[in-house]
Length: 418
Ligand SMILES: [Zn+2]
Image (tube, rainbow, N blue to C red; front, side, top):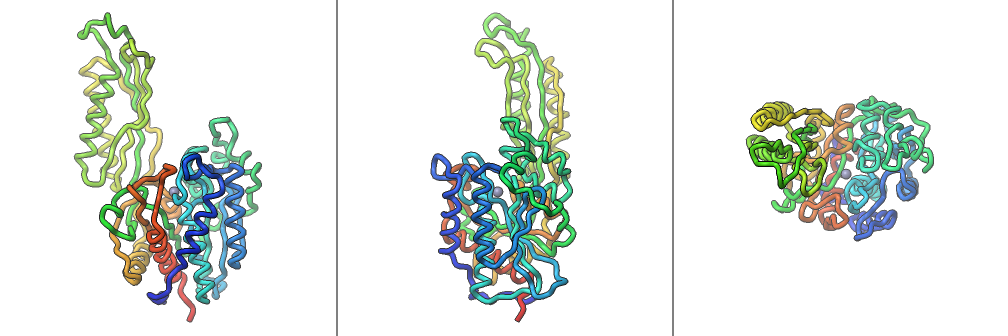
């Protein structure tokens, strides 16, 4: 496959300007963004992206989940498109780069191809996946999931936000229900590349420009309900208490222990905790919490789930407490396509950027698309690993390195026509 010359680079200033221009739509309260999915701001951001793509000579397709596909034709009418992209929606208190860098970095790659007169055999398509964040309509990566056949469209349309508005109604309201059948393209993709900020601290700490993403860790959510007996904190003697809060505390120690036992990649914590009745002078009679375990290795996730159940049962039996478990979410670890991962690593190498292999800690659209097409991800550092926060920050050089690598990996995969 022909690769672009090592001196061919994207235009970092133009990329940065576009990032800052997009950030003006749906501004946050602290310098970041609130451009949640299927809001008026989301629609406005989509229109700006559409305008930029059309100015770059691309044509738009939109599917029934609102996924946007902007196409730059190739020279071979029979060649399948090479995709790149990410998401333009943000958290309610989100940053300017999470997702957006992957979409506008892709746009910059196409703009640079235009500047440099690069033609490719395969068409190139930039995707903006609807509702990656899942903050307004759970779950995350909803529309790429429907596209890849993980969820049905009917189920997705029925997802409700906190005000009881449905995904389907809101997609219609903002005017982004397309006429393409969702997923119709999924068997006609040559490859997909997603550029994303790391959302973690590793690359910055090690001074690396590029993360070559080999895997994405899997996730398991187990909701645990511990039941005891609510009673007066003052007048109930210690031996007669059935303290569900204490049971939970011991289980959380166990969660930590289990995750450490699978170091360095496994992690575990409970970020959701409800205590009942949650009153200062009542011993908790019930606690409900969700244990979040993650690992790039499915066998490790299964082991962690098993040890949680056995260990928590023993803790609660010993304390005279009841315990129940419900699996409330999860997805399997992802191994990205070797050919696409190699294209990313080769691009970083050719361009002279420092790089290391990395495992994605968060879920991304690429994780679902990997089920239907050869896929890889490129990561660039973010300051202090901070993301899902308005203070999320990257440097212009990091954005440039990421977009350069995306540009090279995509052009190589789409095959330059000499
Ligand atoms: Zn993202």
